[in-house]
Length: 451
Image (cartoon, rainbow, N blue to C red; front, top):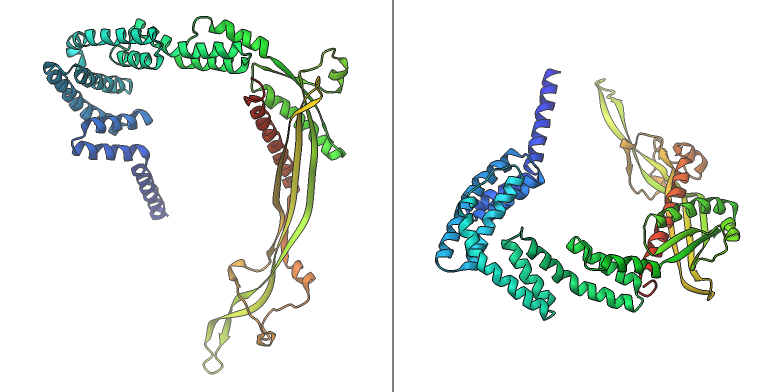
């Protein structure tokens, strides 16, 4: 027992060692060592940093970042001094930035690297006039409405002076101004939805609003807001009606959770419809066009094969008993009982004032599962498929049953789980709701519909 436990522990440790050696972090560290051995210290440091950022606190990664990082920072600073003396300002600044970025990333990952602070004054002096020229060129580009060129120039300046608030503001202006103008143009053409999301994209990119963008966003929502009333789902039978009620509630929840600022979803059931004095801008009419359940479909596959039996055979002369394998011909069946469910939901978006259909779609889903199966009652390990053609080949020991399907079926063990059918109903229903929600939102977001 002790030896078995020891073997189990050793096997577990071996599996863990193999898994560790195959982990992405360990593979990245191995590639980092190969790059360093080839003289590509910068690439080796970056790869070690990525491994450490992927798995913080990894000791091997920290050691490699420290070893390669210190070496590479010194090399980049030597390159900085060399290029600065040669008058190659841009290349010198880029070398310093590479060293500073490695230092910052390593420090953020918990590995202390240093060296750039000793050259910071020289770096600031070298970048001063160059950054000033970049900013002046960016201003000239802005005056000429070359916003793409201005953005590139300001981005270049921020590479060397990332903390400069004035350059940051100039970069935001270069990014925001063309998008702001385009949004104003769409707003003037009453394309409120497109204008709103152009301003939203602008804010997401720059991190803040620009001029009067917030006020115009609110105005776009006010002018472009529509109400959509969700009608009851038409269903021809009681079963479909019960299913449709829960589907409608789930669909409303899905649509409301989208938080679309331009759409106000209204539960437009019969009671709300008769009590309201106002009509929604659009109506969502739905109909369950199909819900089919086909239970108890049986598939029977007749098989031929052999059943192995090990018998004792006694030699009449010597009296010695030996084991002998005998194969008996058998007929058996693979039997499956399946349930098939198919559902289809049609939804139509209607303009009640014009009494016209804006869009009509139908989604469908189906599920088929085995709810009961039959298994051969003998030992399946000793049952072998095969083909035998002649009845005359049968021996007295062959268990071949012809024309006795009732007896054959009785030799099978069947299992049945009625909950499977309920799970299938839920699966089909949820899929129909999801497909209808996605299709409807895609339709509403289309530029051909709500603008």
